[in-house]
Image 1 (cartoon, rainbow, N blue to C red):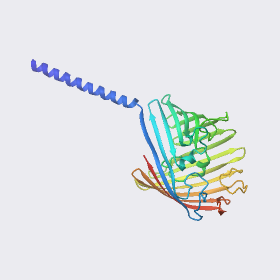
Image 2: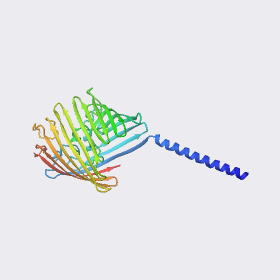
Image 3: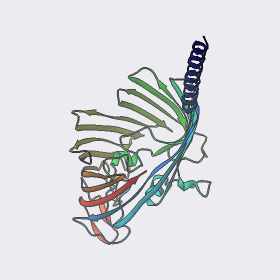
Length: 352
């Protein structure tokens, strides 16, 4: 009897211990799911750029009319530091940039704050439900295939479509998960490129409809509008084709274009990709013709071939780019303008 009682007590103690351990485990998992997580990430990048059929002299040497990677010789990109606090319901992102690439990305700041030119993104979000998220602050644009971060783009230099669309918006937006395949977004923003505050009293409106990784985007701003399609398809496990097309019009002045991004992954550490882009400006928009000749409706066809080799967190990107314009679009203050420009870039990007 004593032995049987001891045995029953032992079983009771073992069962109690097991239940306690299970309860603690569930409590710990629940705490991990609900406790906000603070993280720091970002990139550091630098590059070498040289023209193959034009001089490489001075700060204003010939360069493509698109943004970033346009400085001669060895040049700095930026240090990008992103601090995020992500909770189940609410959180924030503070995305700071330092260096030439960051300055180009935040080109219209500071407007008021002396440190406005280091803020790439600064926003808070609230997951109202599983299907609705509200975001307020300054966030990178929803338009286009490419982004500001050099680690998130396959090509190191950027397209004309990316360069002349908006980089960021300041305002409020609502994202909707309509179903497993469909998504939508509605937003109201300051006028394009006014990221610190709104001195005009006029607001822009944005909308997006997404279906299985394909996005149709619309931005209206003071009578102007931009309609943009961004998407892509995995043709095979190793071959991806990205697509971007857009049209911008402001009373007959604007641009339109299309870009294709075929990318082939050859191993776990190397991939090669091509960007082919045709870009046309309507009226005297000023994106291509840099000679002040008054030529309207200029166009450019650009091919960019990029390799991407990964060594741990370091990415090396050798790149050949050929821009061919309909007019003498490429110039230097000391040399005659020309219609075409070939250039070589070797970039190093470290992501953490």
